[in-house]
Image 1 (cartoon, chains in turn purple, red):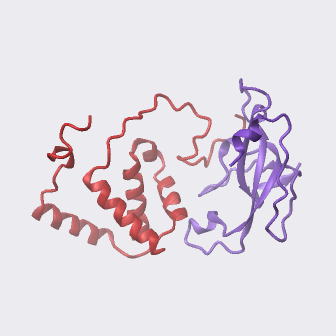
Image 2: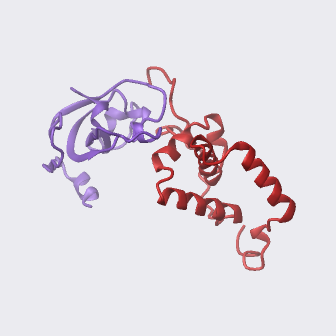
Image 3: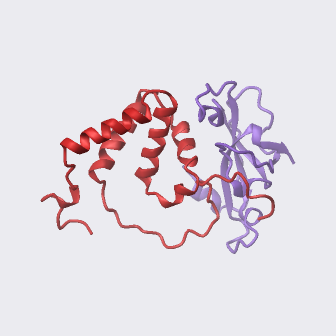
Length: 114
Length: 119
C-alpha cells in the first residue's frame, strides 16, 4: 500500500483500475453520498451521508451485504467504489491540514452524481 | 451534524467522542474462548455470515454500547441460531441449566498459569 505516500503529495493521481462491468460511475466522477437514513443494517456510515467526493477506483462487484445481513443471497451484485473525500468537507470543525483525505468504500446504490 | 439521527446503528459511532480508551490486554476468558470457537465453526461452515453477525449485534440497540466485544458477538450468534431454527430458547435454557448443575466452570484468571500475569 502506498496510501501514506500518496496522502503526502499535493495532488494524488487517481487509479484507473476498473474491473466491474456495468458500473454507473467512472474514476474521477464527483459523487454525493445519499442523505438517507433507512432502518436496518447499512454499510455507509452516518457521518459520510450527504457528503461529496470523487471516485478513486472501482473495487469490483460484490453480493450486497445489506441483503446478506438478513439471510438473503445478496444478488444482484452491487458495484463497490472507493470514494475520496477532503477531510475538511467531512468534518465541519476539522483542524488538520486542508489536503488531508479520507477514502471510504461505498456501494453504488448509496451514490448519486454530483 | 444536520438531519435526523433516527435509524443510526448502535455500532455507527464514527466521529463521536470516544472518551478514554482502555488499551490493557486482559486476554480471553474461558467462556470467551469457547464462544469464539463456536462462532468460528458456524461461520466457517457458512451457517451464519459475518454480515448477519454484524446485523444481529447492531440489533442489540442500547445494549450494544454497554457490552464487551465477546458478549456482543455471542448474543448475536445466539440470536441468529434461534432465528434460523437451529436451537430454541427452551433447548438453550435447558442445556445451560444442565451444564451449570454438573460442571462448575473454572475461573481461568485464577489458574496457576494466569495468576499473577495479568491485571
